Length: 460
Image 1 (cartoon, rainbow, N blue to C red):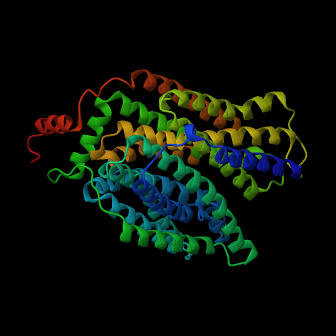
Image 2: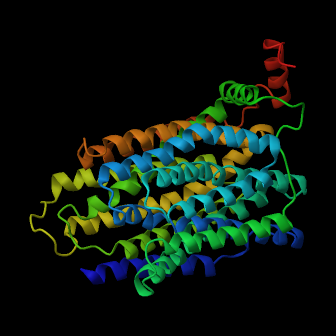
Image 3: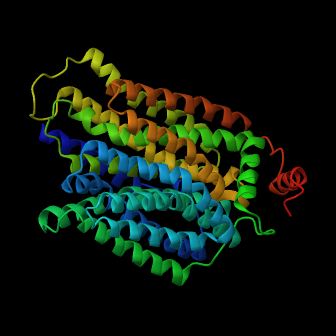
């Protein structure tokens, strides 16, 4: 069955190369040299940040197990990371809007480097501190960098459509090519050079430090709401009012939480789904195949967003439907494909079908990321962008914590079925967003602030 892995990997590699090389003028957007310089600087920084993140991912669980911790203790460490992102993420997002997005990006680098340093200690309490720091860093990674990019893009007067170029390239590089290279580098450090499971975390710290130096030397500062100083509670209230008063923002948050919740659950489930009887599967090679599929999705997204006549809200309905169908495969296979009773060995026939379905889901993820970024840039008010984006992550982190805590209490087919239903709900919500996208906002940010101030006259 080993040839099957190479065929799938080769197929996606050829398709990605063909799509990138065959782009014509209809698939490209004419830009200016100033924008290209700005875009390349951001892509360099984003790629370094993602390298620091991807290097750690495959070795976190392995490192904890080498320190002698069991599944229960390791599960608590993972829950601490997501819980930290939920509790502190909104706070740091609000601080980013108020204190500056560049400063928040630098804080991400410092926080994640400190988290990497804690991995040198086998003490459970120290590792727990590292997970808390990692959760805070994750919130900053997925809000502050995008917020800085959108604000700086608009401040420099670039065309709004050009944002889609940066978004799609960032996902193609940061969530695709960089992930593959990081996986190979981590394998080189741990297996080939025998530097131990801490080595990838040290390498991640180096990439983060280089990225921080680039940020400090070449990025300018930008802010959210520049008005009078307000406490965090007031900022939270303003973000909540923005979500509650604009159906488009609320729908966008629900869609993001449903898709990302399903995606993170998939990360925990794909290994046992492909090897239910402890089949010997090449995890690293399969991961690289997933990343190629994600690159295919982001390349397709760049073509779709380059067409002004095609709206993101339209094609994302199809993407969510396909994603839902791909995660329904484990249930269908359990009914129609006889399960293998042999322990060990290579991947089963059912596993091969699942792998094709899972790569399809990863391709949908590649389309999702630049597309959701594009929609967020259109609908979320600039003044509270980081705060609102981290509000969106609260239900996501709650869901992932619940799944982690109960992952052994339900059959794996039940978990995939739940994710498939969530994606189907996201499809219907996306349909609703498509229908109301052309409606004007009921209130702008300034009106919402004034109304909030009138409701709370003691807050001066």
